[in-house]
Amino acid sequence: MNAGADKFPSESNLNERLAHSGLRLTPQRQQVHEVLREKMDHPTADQVFMRAKSKMPEISMATVYNCLDALVQCGMVRQVTLDRGATRYCPNMQDHSHFYCDECGSVYDILQTITPEDSDIKLPRGFRLKNIETNLHGLCPDCASKAK
Amino acid sequence: MNAGADKFPSESNLNERLAHSGLRLTPQRQQVHEVLREKMDHPTADQVFMRAKSKMPEISMATVYNCLDALVQCGMVRQVTLDRGATRYCPNMQDHSHFYCDECGSVYDILQTITPEDSDIKLPRGFRLKNIETNLHGLCPDCASKAK
DNA sequence: ACCCATATTTAGAATAATTCTAAATCTTGA
DNA sequence: TCAAGATTTAGAATTATTCTAAATATGGGT
Image 1 (spheres, protein in one colour):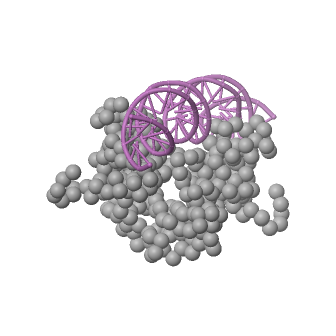
Image 2 (cartoon, each protein chain N blue to C red):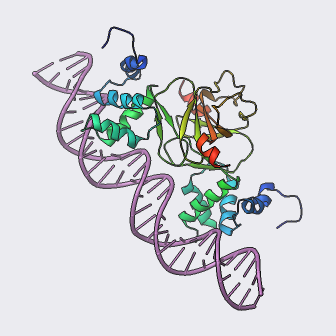
Image 3 (cartoon, chains in turn green, yellow, blue, red):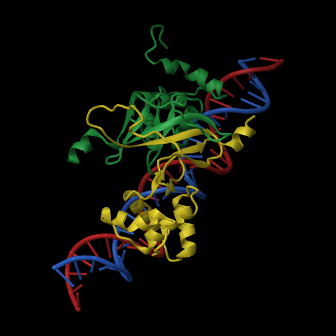
């Protein structure tokens, strides 16, 4: 699309990444990925649907779920489950963890995490560890100040 | 209830714990807690409901949710959200993490974890960290061996 | 370019998970 | 004993996710 520097390096990988998992690049998958990158506020499937719909009115909810699954499967998006509510989606594939405010439910990316390497977690024989998900729970600045 | 050694030390705390959060000890809350401690296989609310119902036939689903919420709130039970499916509940309040098999969905307690102290995670100003939830993702022994 | 096999999308129905509601019941403390 | 408030209950309502079957799109081989 542009000959110059890629503003969105991973966008250019989308096709390869999908292909690597035996999946095709489709306008819908592109759109869903774009929606996620545009506003990285950990939207739910429903929010992704509404945002995608505004650009691509024919897209359906089922497709959004399909696309999210495809993007998760090929490693372009992370699924984030923090509470009993709807699952959220995060296109930031850098190692990072999520801070979840137990009070108001807001989510923040925290650019630090524990990797299988620097953790000294030992699993019983036979387990194969792929990655460690770190969720930080507490109060966000807003709620912390309200709480005295 | 018994003068001897407590087989279930946290059971005896239930009342205090609830009281400390301004909650009452009720037969239903006791039952739900018992169900969880009886088989620590990370059941969903629905499974807890069925198990509790067999001992206390009049209990309702809404009550199970209420009780689980009360137990979580007073720190007697942990909520575990690992995928898009139903939330699971864990009465083991020792520091530990959960291993989740991405293939078959089974969950194992792993008696190691990262605590706020031994992690050197620094949060931006204002955040108040309460606890770190560590979820290990990968393949369980069964699925790992099947996967070559 | 044309055809095929397969992948993907779609709307809507179906299911699953969770929350809400309003009435009944149970405590607790004055 | 009473009143206020907490808790439980059944069932309805809502929300989240998955399923289904038909329509459409795509890529590879000719």
